[in-house]
Image (cartoon, rainbow, N blue to C red):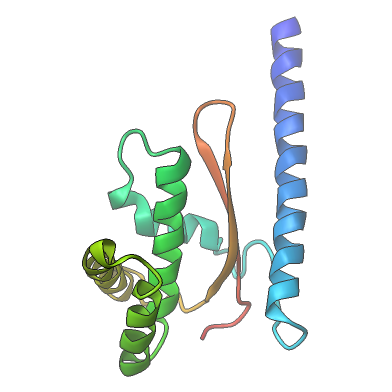
Length: 156
């Protein structure tokens, strides 16, 4: 019986931690977006963008997909996602500007990877047109992770 109680307490702690993280995430998104942008946390029309982003990056997650590497993948994936929402000419200019922030020896690989991700977004997720504004990635006690995303309320 004690084992069930402990699992229940752990689950309650985890849910409380997720709720606090979600509140911080929403607050950061509202601060960054300004007053003119409507920020709606959670699912819109039954679609959770965190689940969509997980599906989007899933082919690139290796078996040890935790920690710094996963955070970097989510970050680059979200950059590519948001770039894919732009018109093609603006997208290319912004892609090059984003890559320019990195050292010369990684720029070509980054540009190639961003283009690959953009093509994946356009091919496999064309119906999702919400911009991702903020995210958090939390390590879970079971060795997994929990992704929370705040996105624009309306299609871009």
